[in-house]
Amino acid sequence: MAEGKWDGILNPEGYPPPRAAMMPVCTPPLAISGTPRMRVDVWNEAGELVFGQVQEKWIEIGNTGGGKLEVQVQVPEWLEIAGADLAGSGEPAAFAPHCLKAEAGTELRVCLRPCGPGMERQGEILVESVGEGRTVCIPVRIVPVSEQAVRSPSLALPVSGFDGRDRADGCGKTQDVGGSADICPAVPSEEDGLIAIEADSALGLGENEAFRVIRRLGRSRGNLVEVCSRERADLAGAGKPLAYFFDISRAGSCLLELHRFPSLNSTGRIRIGVSLDGGPVQVMESFSNDEWKGNWKKNVLNNVDRLYLELELAKGGRHRLELHAMDAYFAFSRLVIYTEPRKENNLAGLLSGNCQRLPEEWDTESWCRDFYGDIWLKPRALEYVATEMGDTIVKVGRNVQAEVYGDCIEPVWYLEQGNRIFEEHEGAVRIDAAAALAGSRFAWVTSDLWRHCAGESFGRSGLCLYVRRPELKWEDSAEAPAMHYRFCCEGGSYRLWMLTKFNYIEESAYRIGLDGNMIPRKELYNRGSMFRYEAEQIYQWVPVVRLVVGAGEHVLDVYSMASGMRYDRFYLTRGEELPPMDGGWLYCGRDNFLDVHGGGFLVK
Image 1 (cartoon, helix red, strand yellow):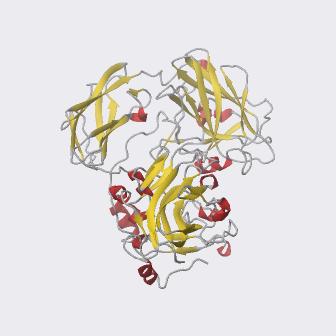
Image 2: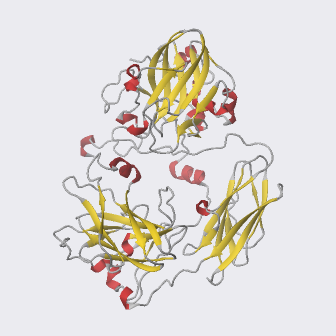
Image 3: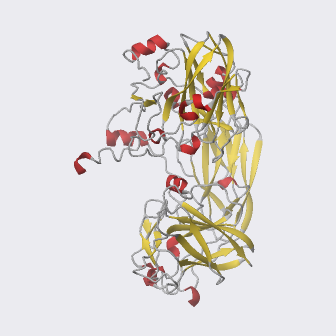
């Protein structure tokens, strides 16, 4: 396309353009042993299960021990077990008690839904671990919601209000959201501490000259609602506001979260007016109107600009929320009203009417084999950064493609490695960052902020360490979370390499110390920052510093000056070779590594 100018533009792992976000984190257990042990998690991390507009929810039952966990689930007669994710069996069951079995380190999801009349009910779900003789009791209740159709002239919605619009139902289908002239759509009500409202559910939207619907451009699902240009509507006040109704059980303060489409307006402002129950208009404004302004970077990564406003509700019951057009092209997809303290999330609640069923189990590997053929994917290429920083946009260093994956390990391997000193072998010391989980005198961490996550090393079975809590940073290394490793070497001049991954510049800060003494920033790679545009979202080996070390025991100190960056491996070498690739990390010495790669690569 365009004489090759667009070649590779849709390659999410290539550069340029900027790489797509890859390799989401997960936290596998470090050890699975002993007798079966039951763990039960309730929907939305709540202490009870409440059914309102969402009529299908589930609980998760996990086996945190070894062996096979046998459990029995008993539910009230007005609740049915719609299905159980039984290690892929997917066999439905509509009776109680129900017997399930979970292998070591696995979990099963038990899907539940009310049956019979939708009246107010209370009861409990009993989950019994047969082998342990332990029972977990989960309170469960049904809260009747308001009538799904409200026959009232003040809430009437003409059929024309829905002309040409549809909304995805969350299961890949679309549904007509129209209605008769005297029936409005379902009035959203409080559930799980929030009220979720689709932008295109406003009354009379199809006849409103100040707003228009852009189909299927909403975040995650559904449609987008946008303020029209000034050529189509007078935004100074002639256009009618959008009206939304919602039900709430109590009076008090609530937090309104609006999901704005992250468009830009570098020469103007991005605002919307908000009024509650006919009260004064308050302004919600985004200051991310251009690149690098406001929360622009976060908005791009999350595909949403979240705007917030405190609402004061004088009483419980039904309320009317109105949005007033102020600036052209302001677009949004959803409103969320939090009635309880907001939990950090990326989905913004559960929308009534959308599909919340568990995904069906099916043989994805066979399907891919039939569709793509019997192919074998090579490991991801590994980036080795050059010692000279250069331009932050231009790609530097070497991209090396491995032909085989490294040998897989169990997480407990790291705990074993962290209980003995790291020794020099053939001129190099190899350290796996997650060995600090051992908490021994040979490998340990300072700060309880450190978490482990799955990594790409050891054939994608390895672990990394990182500070999980987002948007933290430290100016003083004495206060920053650190990893410490005791090693023994022959002495000399060593180059320290680090295998790390960061998502954006704010995460890339680090510091290095040796035996408790900080290395000056001017001696570190890029003065203590891993950042390069072409290095975002990928694991890379970086030569961070040259150390002169005496013979004997020493302690390597690695400080994370900001949260988010993942630390995988460290490589101290007296030579000029690149660190081994994954397949040679455990077994190949430096000389063998050079043979494997046809003489090796020197860092220029």
